[in-house]
Length: 266
Image (cartoon, rainbow, N blue to C red; front, side):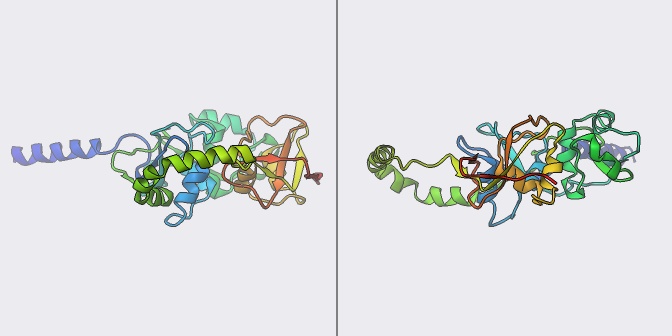
């Protein structure tokens, strides 16, 4: 009987050590030197069909502008909304978003990201009256970095293709160098910006939520972030131009407003 008790105790002890804090990531990608969030989304499209908001929801602490070589990004989790690990807070009339984040031991940005699927927009307290009674999801352990201890690495489709042509690339390295030099000389280098078609100019009191839900704009938060990859919704500055319409956005490019038409928010 003593033997059985000790075996059970040992088993329970091992079980509690299998995973660390945070939700369990099932599959992840390891960032390379030149990778961006757009590269991850494009490369995993054949398997996950992820949007930017999905990536941010699974990795709420990342900064897409400051990804580091070797950093892991979770692409799939099997217990993201586990009821034993996730709590809910009901918004009250007297609440502020900053106050809610403080009560839940995290930041507004993290709560905003993990509650994307609930359409909770934690930007500016002017819209909190419309959120009264809504649930805010948060982690009971207040830990928002994924646990990768049992996660399987996923190879993006673009890297699968490059692996098969690695030997050929080495043989043609001299040709590539010549081609790159010619490209610079002819001015056909890869563009770092795209042509914005329509934009708004930020005024005092504007928020990202107010902009992308406006009748004259009417786009998703995901589209707004894709059109403006360097946009910081927590620190909007007056007179800043924000692109709200373009057919050429993507790949972490910065909007060019030279031929863009300004629209007014209703």
